[in-house]
Length: 152
Image (cartoon, rainbow, N blue to C red; front, side, top):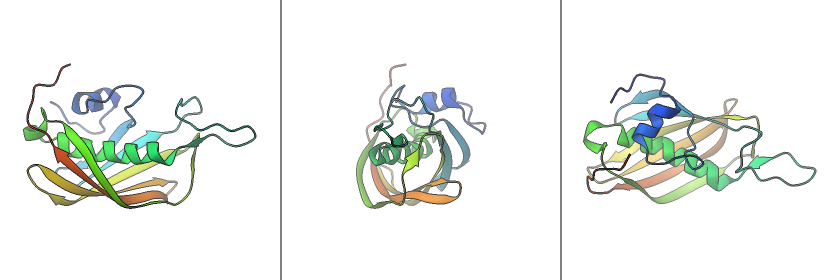
């Protein structure tokens, strides 16, 4: 599999099992195997996941933002050749803080850094930024399932 950066939506689909509307990463701009990754999530005005209340700006629910950070981390782990046919499971989050709402029109730059990496489990520190301002940060734990042939 070619991992020429930036990874676009189609390249991300070859790594993650998620599909529209649950694939929440639009592009990957940086990737250092076993260390860090930077991905982009564009929040469009027609995003079906936005919370819309009369008289208020459409806002992305914090849980969806958390999932986007987890997916960026999953791309880092599943991009390794030995993990390509494995599934990754989101096991837990710690010390996640939501600093401000994310609105339609925002571009979220998501960075995940490896804190601990073992053959079947690991921990990542993730952060989302809009215009350089942190909107979410926290620590996420994952587990890798047994190698399987994934359906395409």
